[in-house]
Image 1 (cartoon, rainbow, N blue to C red):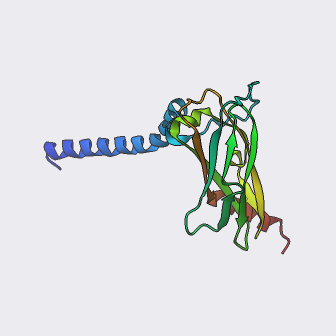
Image 2: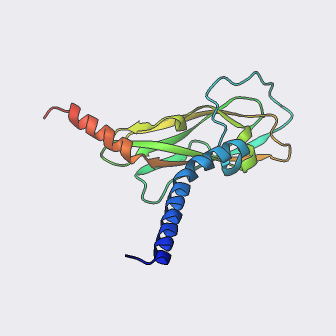
Length: 188
């Protein structure tokens, strides 16, 4: 039997480990909530509903830059169709990102958006975006994936440049599920 001091230390260390696990488990949801309310982290205002009737501010021009991010082992070709647009706040715009599956199998892609500077994120409104849903690609398939957006005229006047970037990655669980579905549907 362990002495009382050792037993107390073991209980404290166990409680500390459990607390660290709980904190780690709650980090992602807490971060998402914090970004939503503060605009920190470049999360966009993903408004899929109708955009309120806003008059474009034609006296102001903002440059929106588009960036595509992949890790070096990614099995994709991924790029914006245009590198930037000059836009008027309050006006709706369309652009696209091109993606191609470079493998000989199906892939499911998911995109994570980011806006810089972080303060602009709460003023960047996407009404349609390929990032809202998973993207299924057959072997070798390539296509343009659309983004429809506007910048709220309430964007602070000193911000004249916004960068919208997407990190595009293979959604491995969804790819495995799609592969299994296709294999089950194929007669042997």
